[in-house]
Length: 298
Image (cartoon, rainbow, N blue to C red):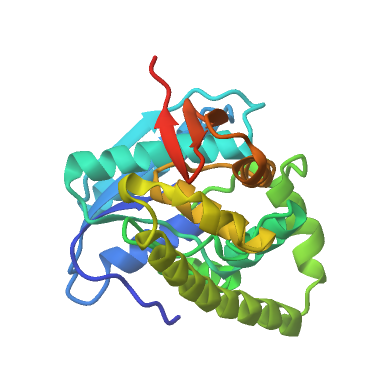
């Protein structure tokens, strides 16, 4: 199994107790020369009654490997959404990263996850970034994205690893499980390779577009605002991309397509002096010649 492991340093390894993350932990620990200082991090979401057994397995494995172990109990309800569970999980992992001074978090997302995420986001109507949402970045490293799930299972069996199966993975009320069990199995190997090629090509295109957008924002008004006259002359689809990049540059994230569409229209047609609610206590101030973001005073 070919895996491009990250640069030697201190990392927080997200280990759920499933086969993917247990294989990842084994790969990292037994890498040539063991060049990593690993911190094993486990979040008990509290969604399943037997979730404590996951923690016990991960904790015992970390002890056997001589690695520090950190865990947290989130006490989520069985009705908690995938989005809520993900938000809580990454908050915990980033807290551990900051407190330990680690370079980044390492997760066990693999090739099947890439395909599932792309399909899910297509079904949700996500924009260009939705198809390439699962990738590595400076604070989250995903070294298994080119490795199929079956290869990880074969590796784990060959190494004699122990892991636990998450019973909620069979629950098709979760959209990802439906995609995993009903849609992805319909794809042939050729179909999967074709979709992976599309995702890779779009990833490169997105990088080029993001560079152009950063350059465009660099030449806007002082103080992080937008030149309204120039913005109003942009084609609608381009204006949406510019506004999305502008919001992210101002640390406004997690907006949806409906919010973005509303803001583009408001930016172009609202009277000067009109404050437009964005989200999370942020407003867009529409001026005669510029657009600016303001944080509401509490």
